[in-house]
Image 1 (cartoon, rainbow, N blue to C red):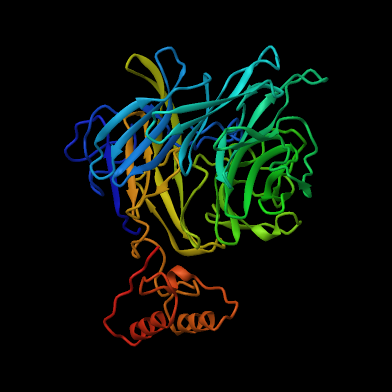
Image 2: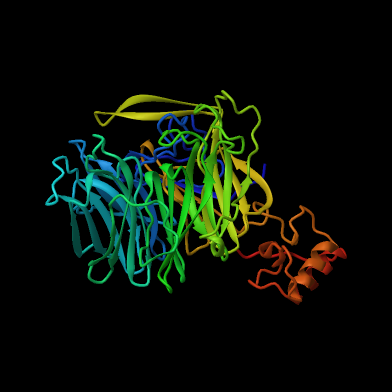
Length: 535
């Protein structure tokens, strides 16, 4: 097992040596430093590893972390108050010491939490409310724009919008592009003629400066949406999870569908020509509307040329699904940006290839993908032999605590094409949560976990060559040899070769050029030289 550089901070617990994080979770004190502070809010955000009985229908993400200063992190989380109502807290924490700096409660325009997003100039909070009377005059959604000092709030309310209950059986995520805020979420719709409230995605585009609505998508429409113009989103029902990301050219919206269509679908909205195109990454076997789909999505991100999707998924190749209790493999789905709108096959990279999955008591989580740069990504997922839940009283409130047997976090590095760099490693002192890990300005990847207790913030160094990848292994065959020199020379000559640029940049200057060739040849000749990688 490769050694990891890890730092962990615990809030509100006076510890001097080791730290036990929840029941049944190993000590982290031996592998990092712990700083005790006080005042952080207790909660529970452990990443889900349960069977797929209900959890193929995702939930809104309630835990967030972002860097808010040179040496400051801000934790934003939706917790419950004494009346079991949603409350959103924002805690500033010293990134080096773990000390709590300031805590505040955000103003919620509506009672139900939907999502949080850190934009370039503002913070955004989406909240909602049920509309059980199906009134077009009822507020069902609010987008709140917040200045980054938390001093000024501006609300935009949406009414009716064919919405019975917002955020039901799905999530809510946002992105910015071209001065617009794109919100991708879901809802239960007004009762239809068959007597049911059907679930579907629901999406909006707002002008950031004014919060005026520029596009809204909330009605039933055809799921086939390629070729539409000036529509940023396509319809999906049911849609059990929603992701949205963007680059300088396009906005990419992802849906997990079980009916219309029964697939993992990716839409690309071209910011230049205004056209919307889609492709299905994975077609899911089974009957239309069967809620069990055998897949959970952990992340969607972008490399230079591809969309990368982290999946916990059953084998779909046989035309039928496994049992919901069976162990699922961890995949990276890779789809070229330029191919969206075609029927090109999606590349699926299986990172686990488990044996004896049927009826297994082993559990895992959907993978988190952390972007280090356009050609280097860290993939994190959790595995354990067994998972059980129990209930305990915390501050007089009955809360669920997750107990895990032999938990460990798997760590892989992939390039922008989904290719595995080096070996998959593991660390039993880490934990994962629903909070997406972030890359901080000091080059460390950070995230936080709670288990009906105080937050623990983990920091992982993605630059340590002993941990990730093999510097010098430019062709990715697991060895450093003369063939790596050759492929670098071919790359420099403009050949279309399959090269790992992170491994090829052995002097760590951010470029692959003749200096890397010289250093690599010196290494192969037995000179006492040092490789320096730069993520």
